[in-house]
Amino acid sequence: MYKTMIYSLLLAIPAFAVDIPASSVPVPLLPGLGLYGQIWQAVDGNGDPVAMNWSNFAQVKADLNVDGRAPDATFIGGLIDYGSGSGNLIADWLGADAASLSPKGFGSRQLRGAYIRLQGSLAIPDTYNTIALPNQSLVFAITSDDGMRLTIGNEVVAEYDGPRGVDTDTTLVVFGGPGLYPITLEYFNGLDDGAVLKLGWDILQDQNYAAVPTSLLYPAPEPANWTLVLAGIGLLAIGVRRR
Image (cartoon, one colour):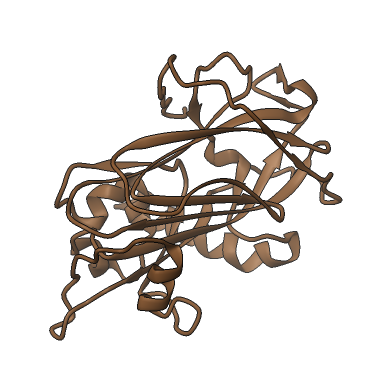
């Protein structure tokens, strides 16, 4: 069962479309387990997270040296429906996905001064839940507080490059056909004024938005890379079920 996430019946229909060239990688037979998540966080001299008054992604990545060092923590992002009030812990914000967080103790930190990147693949099938996707034309909705950027293939589908309160951007995405497409969702939260990140879609284009299902999200961009990743996640899932 997937948790349904209804954004709003009042969301505006996207004014433009993004075309994604057809993928040569077919939709896998096995369902996905989510995207590979990475977290970088600003800290003070004691190693405690600090709030940052960031203006854009470029400043975030420079301050955290995202391209020059390993992430502070990793996780698997299944149903990307993350939201909180101010001051919540990372584990609370991630919800069920906190079970995959490494190192485990990272979940006790406050979510501030953080950059989060979720990467992997998005499967676009011919049909989903017996519903034929209309020429693989789908409306995506990304809700965030603060900045967000969604990239599918080599195309930036949606972006808000700065701090903001909770808001949603929608974009019509036209895929070249069914297949597996690289996807990256970036997010940053600077201050202690709330944190939200939700990835949704509207497969009927009737302005009813639900979370993109975990079964269509894979933690690596190419099938050849899945074996070790999926094996590790499988062991994690077994451990969680035994608790």
